[in-house]
Length: 388
Image 1 (spheres, rainbow, N blue to C red):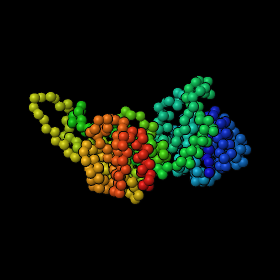
Image 2 (cartoon, one colour; image 1 turned 135 degrees about the vertical axis):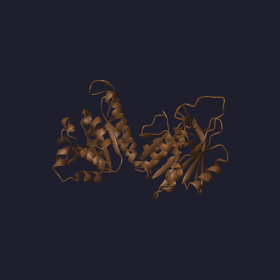
Image 3 (cartoon, rainbow, N blue to C red; image 1 turned 90 degrees about the vertical axis):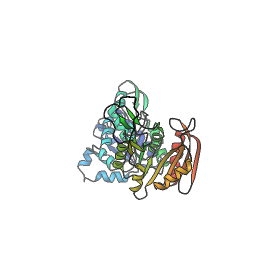
Image 4 (cartoon, one colour; image 1 turned 60 degrees about the horizontal axis):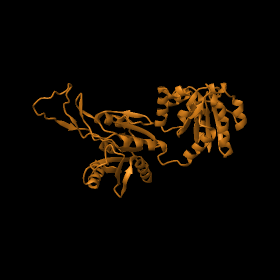
C-alpha cells in the first residue's frame, strides 16, 4: 500500500517518525509531505533518512512543474495528516489550497485520515469543530484525540492519537472498506413544519433520530453524506442542512442532486395551508376552515430525475395494511426499496427506540422485528450493500 503522510506545524510532529516506521515495518511504502511550519519542529532530513527518498515541501513544489500535487495524489492509496493543526484542518475543510499539502488534499479522491493535535480550548472552539464536521461530512475520518498533559502543560483533550493506534485504526478502516466507501449519499430526515400562522403548524411526531442514525452509520462506512433535516436538536457528527418546510426540503434536495444513493427518511407533510396567516389567528366562538394544498412529492421527483445506477429508498410509516400500502408506494414512485414500519402500536413508531421494519423490494421482503434504531441503521446499510 502507498501511504502519503502529511506533517503540519505541531510539537507532535516528532511522533510522525514513529507513524512512518509503523507502516514501513509492515511492508508499506511511505512518502512524506511537510508544511513550512512543521519544519520548525523537525527537519526534513530526518524523514529523508527514514524513507530514503526526498521529502515533499512547498519550496520543492514551487520549483518543479505545477502538476506535482496531482502525481502525489494519484500515487497514494491512503493520505494521513498527522499531526493536523487547527490551521491545516481549516484549509482542507474549506479548500484554501495555498501550499503543497492542501493542494494534494484537494486532488486526492479517497478518504483522508486527520489526527488532530492542539490545546483543549482550541479543539473545542466552534471554528475548529466546524472544520471537523465539514471534513467528516465530506467522507474523511477524524481520528480520536487523547487526554493528558499537553505541550502547554495544561491537562485536557488534544493529544494526537499514538502512532501505533493510528496505524491500527487506518489499517482496520482500509481492510474493512464498505461498498459505501466514497459513495455520495443524500438523506432526508425529521419532520417538516407547515405553518398555519406564526405560532401554529402542521407536523408529525417524527424526531429525526432514525435518519440521523442512518447518516452516521453511512459516514462511518466511508460514504460522503449530505443530511437534509427538519427541525431537530439531536446531535450529529457530520454536517446537517437544516430546513423547516417541505418546500425548503424539496429545494435543498434538488440542489444536492445527483447522488449515488438517495434515502427519503423524512416525515414530509403531504399538505400545507394554502394561505397561512401572517398574524396569530385569534380564538372566537366560530369554527374555522383550513384550506390546504399539496406539497411537492420529493421521492417522486428524485425518482423522475434518476441518474444511471442510482439507488433510491423511501420510508413508509403506516397504521394498517403496512406491507400492502408500502408495496403500492414502492411501485408508484418507482423506488428500488422501501422501508415500512408501523406507528400505531404502543412503544413503537415515532419517538420510540424500537420498531419492526420491513425492507421491501420488487423481489423480496426482509423483516427485522423488535429492532432498535441503532441496530437497524447497521442492518439497513448491510442490506443496501447487498444490492450494490
